[in-house]
Length: 284
Image 1: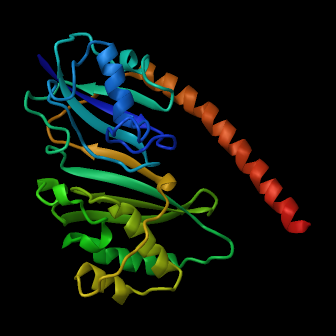
Image 2: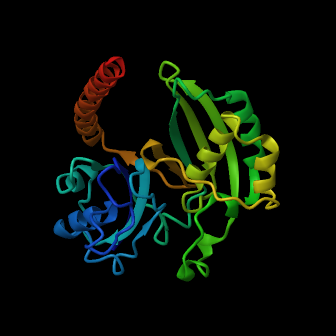
């Protein structure tokens, strides 16, 4: 048996999150991945392969670089082989052969997310205030106020401790000033934590809340429900490890880029169609 780590990317729009769910719920990224790995005789099943994943992105969230690991007796595993059995909106692009007890979740030292927050003409956002509020999040804190409460069975799980360390939060306006791009890096994230942080910063930027309110949330002096920002703007950008060297499959990357470029052309065209349609109805 050999230990394998894979880097995956995906568009989460049509999936009910990353983690495998009962068939009645609908397709997930993991269910499609397991189907491909089993068809290719790479793994027999999840348990026997000692499978692990770096994170469990929510429904509608995307990934540039998710990481999974498993044991296999197949000596010829390549990203392009796996891609031949995956749908077009899920892909593998890099592979590593780490140490035998490597665990994609437990051995991750940091995770990075990026969020595209659209700027609306009728809703101004003060980026300076948002940056000042984001500084309060950096460091090790109890982020209970920024997470969906865990289910009953999750309270005992090690990775559901509310203590996390945020290493950095960066905000920038990009894409012709149409978006605020927010990058967040931490040693780990709670459920919906990134999206709740985004909503928190947006409330501050819009003037509804202030820096002192965020300080109260961080210090647990304030308890308030914050709705998570929409999932479609969130990307799992990177998962980092020590002493694990991934080799990227250049052929697979070229095929993926060509496929995604077609998606980009389609959605860019649809954006113009929708903009033109909205403008027409506003003028009527």
